[in-house]
Image (cartoon, rainbow, N blue to C red; front, side):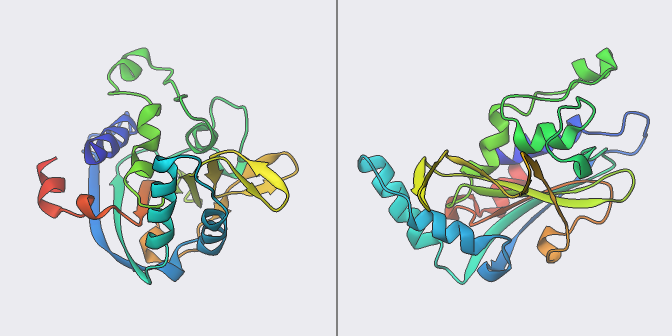
Amino acid sequence: GLTRENIQNSLDGRLPNSEEPVVVTIQLGMMKRAHIPGIEEIVTRINSLEGRNSYTKETIAHMKASMLDEEVRYISFEDAHTKGLTGAKYGQSNNPEHTWGIYAYNKGVHFEEKDEAFEASRGGSHGVGKIASNAASDLHLMFFANCDANGEQHLGGTIQLIEHYYNDAYYRSTGYFAKLEQTKFMPYENTYGHVFAKNTRGLKIVIPFLRESFYDEAEVIRA
């Protein structure tokens, strides 16, 4: 399901006037924990979580154990001959033309193409599927690297925790890898390591702390 969801999202983002096929390169590998953007803050947040029942206590204990590994599994999905996301430099805007803001910060919402035939041919929306990548991670963590038509490169990400108390304030469960400027989120320019690099137009999904049961090349190929 994870593999198919990400392939479908890439197909939905294909260049409408291109005769080139959409290509999705899938990479399984190991990476150093220290190279994951924002990992120290993630560790601090997870350490502040408190379980209220047996399920959340077990989940938090698993996350705390997983986050200590010096090397972690990951999977990435990098597409080519796709549009990528637009308007990243504007961050959390309300402009329907800026697909970065929709993809990065809005759950249950997807961008609709002006071309009705092209829109109808798409396989789905960025709804429930938007958290499929989070669910594949032991820390419920995912990143997305974008390169747009102008060659501008940005990195975003989300983590799905539970509501928690941290530094004298209460926080909701969804966290964003973003800068807070005044009242809106803004993305980081992508200056991170090779696993997170996206140098050609399109989108790259990176899931660190990949669940052990998902680290299966044969199953990925079959999907």
